[in-house]
Amino acid sequence: MESIVDVIIPTCKPEEEFITLLNALQMQSIKVGKIIIMNTEEKYFEPLKYKMACFKEYPNIEIHHL
Image (cartoon, rainbow, N blue to C red):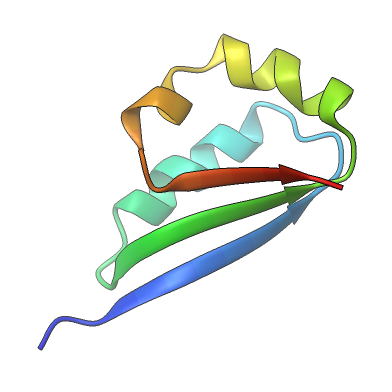
């Protein structure tokens, strides 16, 4: 039986290194179900989101702005 885990990541003004983290999560030996991103403020996240294609590549990413 294959293990699947969900991941919750709190963020505050994420930068491009954050994309490296998301890509690494997808390559883990234990399969990732959902990646739930809890972000503090939308205006700091949106520029990163539009700059990187990985948000379109991985349908298992959910973004919630607090």
